[in-house]
Length: 129
Image (tube, rainbow, N blue to C red; front, side):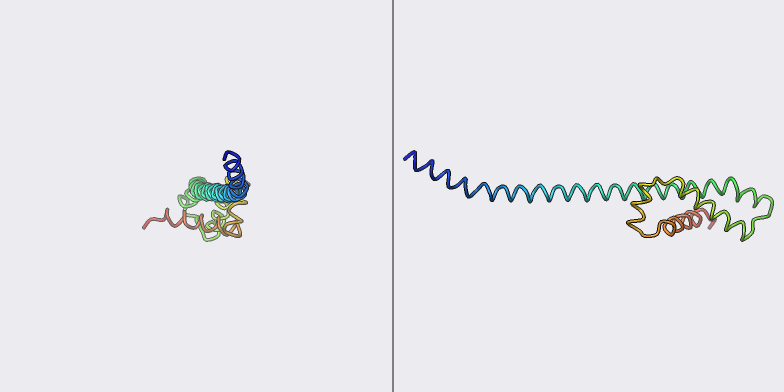
């Protein structure tokens, strides 16, 4: 009788091990995909946050060091406005890490367009209503 149970157990194991291995492999792949997705989402979230902060700081910096002085002297023109915008884009771009730039570009397309949009949003937010 012992031989019968041993043979039965061996037969069950022979059938069960490949099925369990396949199930375990699928489960591990699924968990790995979830982890990659979470890391990707966190990286994108961090890159977007970095870009938003950089745009806000750049607009504040240019306003304090360039725009305010021109406005006080009543010399703020359309040409100065374009120069201030260019300065803010350069400052914001400088503050964003290369890794974040790569993530933003792969997620949103042209990085310069994305930074332009963020700068415009920051400027509009600061305008008196």
